[in-house]
Length: 176
Image 1 (spheres, rainbow, N blue to C red):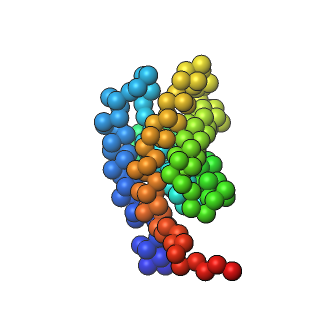
Image 2: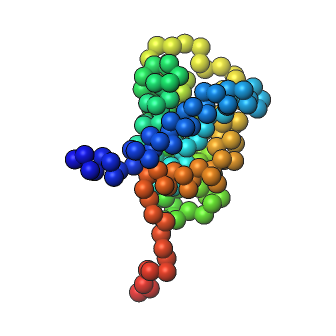
């Protein structure tokens, strides 16, 4: 049981997640295009979904969201739900094609990040917080989605590595 935990995706995801949460809480607090904090942890969750599929994307989003909640002081599990949904939605790129092109992974990473960021006020309203559904959401979601799309050429291979997904080698597939 211990071997399967060590050989699974969690150690790699935790290693990369710690670095991204630290960057999220330090560097990206000051880098705010359109006065919006870029959510790089959500971008990795969506990119992992686009690289590894819906189930692994949801797992990546859940783990990264828990790490984010522990550091940011938000209610435990609130970010993990929204990031898990974002990773799950981004993972549907693999239902269209087995090995998505970079531009298709970029589009699905952006869609997953937009859904994940839209889920934040929904989850926060379920836990009793108020005041998250504001017109500012129409600025925040596109900026976070665009940032995730810009970061996806780097984050999709990192997400593939974290989730231990090997790229499909079409040279070994035999034609019928």
